[in-house]
Amino acid sequence: MQPHLIRNFAALSTSVAREDALRILEAGYDSIDPARVLQTNISIAGTSIVIRGHSFDTASFENVFLIGFGKGSCATISELYRLLQARVKKSVVIDKTVLTACPAEVQAFAGTHPLPSKENVEATKVIVGVAEEAGENDVVLVVVEGGGSALLCSSDEECEQDVRLFEECERVGATIGEMNTVRKHLSSLKGGGLARALYPATVIGLVLSDIVGGHPEEVASGPTYYDASTIDDARAILERYGLEEAFTLQETPKEREYFEKVTNIVLVSNEDSLENMAEAARALGYESVVLPEPLYEFPEKALRSIFAHAKSGRAVFAGGEVRFKIPKDHGAGGRCQLLALESLPLLGPNDVFVAAASDGSDNSDRAGAIVDRGTADRSKELRIDLADACARADALPVFAETGDEILTGPVSANVSDWYFLLTPPAA
Image 1: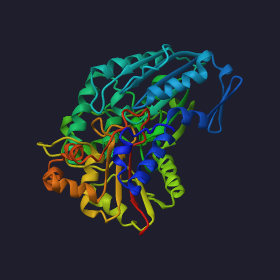
Image 2 (image 1 turned 90 degrees about the horizontal axis):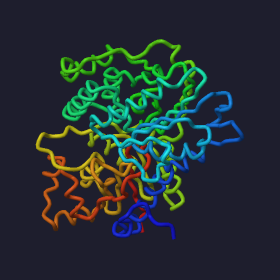
Image 3 (image 1 turned 90 degrees about the vertical axis):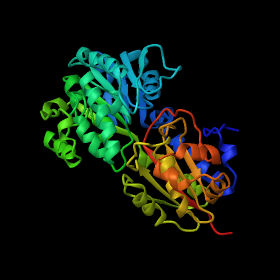
Image 4 (image 1 turned 180 degrees about the vertical axis):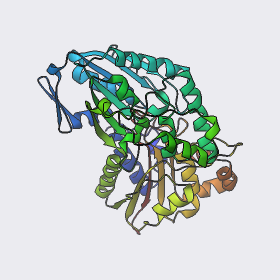
């Protein structure tokens, strides 16, 4: 029997519906496994490499370079190196966690996330070194994954401003899209800056997208994409939240020549993984509904969107990054655990709700939570004040006590968060 990725699968499977939910969640994790993603999307015949219909002849290039950044990028770069190793001159990757199985030929750096640090700046210097080395007759494959906005950090000044921006956006409840627009204008590498640095080499951007809604140019703040936003757009966002005097902005590259030899290809997305989970639900006998719009709203509106589609025998799926205004005296836990906590009053007698981070880390070593009516009952027995926990954003200790936390360990990929509601058919 194949081992479960969810380490506490047996302990969480206290009902048929909960076991179904966990199997569906594991189908999501399976769909973003780097080895599976690359095997599905990349084929090699002789010197040719075909990536989702795009063909490149490596024999026409003098050198092949691999660089990557983002949560899970170490695993993706490692798999890519194994496919191309005889042709690769240099490989560099910055991840939150460096795999012990990473080939020795890959220069792998462990950075910090969600807040960047000196380690990120030093590792980024090595990537800039590759950009300086790559020439007109070379090709650079760039793996871009979620979390790259923090891990790819071009200078100490950018690092300091990114930390301040993250903390301020968390305080005021700004969206991830707003934050990424500003990030592009704090950096020399984001918003197409890496494409400029790599010019005139040929660039193949391989994107594993954690941005829901079809905007891969937002992943890691778009280092290989032309940026349509302007410094005025970034300034307007800061002004909206009263932050305009706290940051020094710069314009992103607008010269089209830097992007003429760039091909960006999305290998897998949040939408792909949601559809994979929906198929798994159908195989278990559920009708599946995938919400077309990403959830970047506050919990009340996000949950209303999901629960509006609830129906006996149905599974409702959504992706995104629900936002919160975090109080100063906040407790512990991430978005997924907090959303699961907020969902408790809405659950019907047989409903199961799951909120999980695709990278297995919901601002902690927990991936998220699985909840049902039993969660609320156990909370009452344990005399847990759920209203206080919600108000203080203190979900982690609640689910540790009720036994509803999902444990996967680090996952070698990241396509944002998954949320789904399962309503088994009435007996």
